[in-house]
Length: 212
Image 1 (cartoon, rainbow, N blue to C red):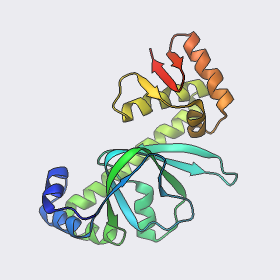
Image 2 (cartoon, rainbow, N blue to C red):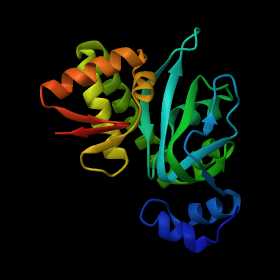
Image 3 (cartoon, rainbow, N blue to C red):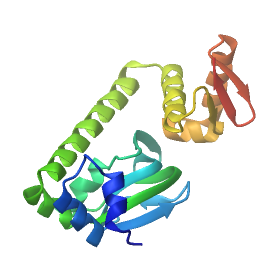
């Protein structure tokens, strides 16, 4: 669905220049997706660049056996560095992009990524900032895996998911969902959550974790 220029001016005020906003309005497509839906899957070609307006998307990597691990999240006013790279190089996706919370987004044609880099300084800056943020996210993920024990990774994941939903202390999620993102088993996550509850870090109830 195409939206009028006023929408783009309101949502991207101060981020993109006037000429770019006009082009985005002409070629951009407004989309809404429900939680659990997929923007990208491994092996598929990426034909659009998403800019998230509301909600969040989790980016995951899958190994040859189908096991997945969380890389990072993208949320409001973010885009995905992986999709940008695949668009520019015309490569198939190597990641999974799954909607965490219902999202509203603008999809932009993939061929515009490189073209706008040469035309609009604000687009070039947006692309560079996107790569920088995703690089920092990846470093944080690597540090977490390499240097933190699984209980610390679990606690960090809970805090991150609460932050993304705009909450303060409560996360609604199943043990299975948390295990999936940590590439471990539900039984392991359940055991770790019980340990965290014993030492006063969390309070557990059905499909709910409260930070203390």
